[in-house]
Image (cartoon, rainbow, N blue to C red; front, side):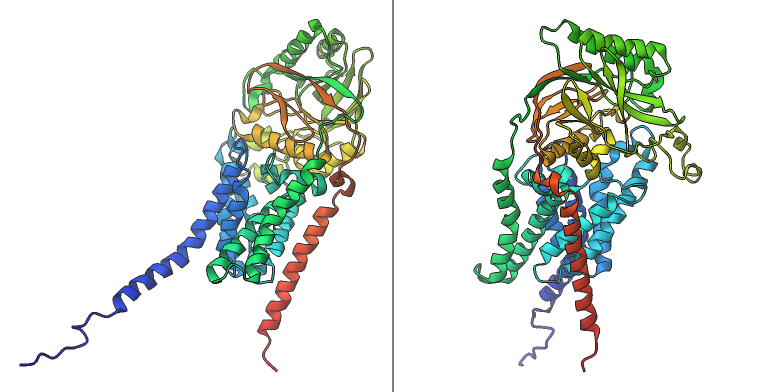
Amino acid sequence: MTATTTSTDVPGPQEPDSGRSARDKLLRRFAPPVAAVVSGLLMYAAFPPRELWWLAPIAFALFGLAVHGRRARAGFGLGLLMGLGFLVPLLSWTGVDVGPLPWLALAVTEAVFVALGAAGIAFVTRLPAWPLWAAAVWIVDEALRARFPFGGFPWGKVAFGQPSGVFLPLASIGGTPLLGFAVVLCGFALAALVRVIVTTKGVRDRAVIAAGALTVAPVVAGAAVLPAMSNEAENGTARVAVIQGNVPRMGLDFNAQRRAVLDYHVRETMKLADAEVKPDLVVWPENSSDIDPYVNADAYAEIDKAAKAVGAPISVGAVVTAEDGTARNRQILWDPKTGPGAVYDKRQLQPFGEYMPYRGFFRIFSKDVDRAGSFVPGDKPVVFDMAGTGIGPVTCYEAAFDGVVRDQVEAGAEILSVPSNNATFGRSQMTYQQLAMDRVRAVEHGRAVLVPVTSGVSAVIRPDGSIAQDTGMFVPDTLVAEVPKRTSQTVATRVGAWPEALLVAVGVGGLGWALARSLKARRPAA
């Protein structure tokens, strides 16, 4: 008898194809979210204390592959995942002494801003030359984060993860906006290059060449600008002393022993009195005297003793009550002969630390809001004449804000000083993240930067962003160095905020073009 063969007796391709289809579906569904989270973690890994600046373009390449061609809503979700992967670990120092709630609230808030930018990035990825538009949209997002809410929070700008590497010289041309744009453009262009290579048979395809050109252009531009950077003195040098007195203990309660903090800095400064060659000027950190020397005779006498012993002016960081009765975070120029003189009041205050917005509302969530200060900001840049050297103070948190630093250089600073107090944040990565900002500012404005910190890391930074000297953390120390005095202005200083404005205009223009194309596509055919 002849057997009859049915369709069930003959194996067909349906089962393998079905299995592959299911796997492909799962891959398409879960690969973009995983890629978004990994890209955020890579961005975090790119930031100091690690010198892994090259991870940033890789992170944006991965993120570009995740969001390309997707709707704005999907871009928002992927951007939120990327932002959380990046900012939750990056900002962990904000919860060192107040617990996880403020830290996570800040990280989530900032991640939402990243998500909004990512929605716009996804929207423009269908445009020709999309990496250009997408990178500009990222700068739009950073510009918004740097200004809103509560005066903005620029921490985590892409540029601040580039204190070394091939992109850094671009800061001298267009400041942090151009530096950040170059990094993001390189990453998105790399994503475009990967896409067209995968979908194009020949490497000579024009799309491959265009994507490759956009990938290498920022690297070439950085290399081209490198020779223009210089550490040479233009108006002689100054012998400077950077004092790190240390604190009795770390945390928010470090200033419970305010007199001890002052004594530590006086003691460290007095060691210079016996030096064969004394410094021309001395810089102390922010909060080095939380005892108001204007009204406390003991504090006045201690600071005056130190200045006279060294025979050099001291820039003293003090908490004072101004003539109008308001609290000020002040830098005081203390002359060894005439005592306190010119002052600089910190202009960009830290919300939830130096002042508390909507104190009553936020008290609902945490009583720690009552530990925040009630400081009032200053209203103008001030350059100290310290033994013939123009020193421009930029107090701690202010280093994150482009305009504040630029104002001091335009006012005549030959050397920048960033007095800081990081004792509140213990041994966290915060001090290294801030030091990276200071290194970028050095290149941006072609100035040496002095970084006196109460508890470390204090440093002397050359105009090319390299570190000449630095200290450890929570140890008393003094750095003495010959520092070049520079008077010329970089292109970035001269053009001011224009590079950011131009890049924001490009980003907004790309969003407008993408919207017009979308509306046109939805119109019914005539």
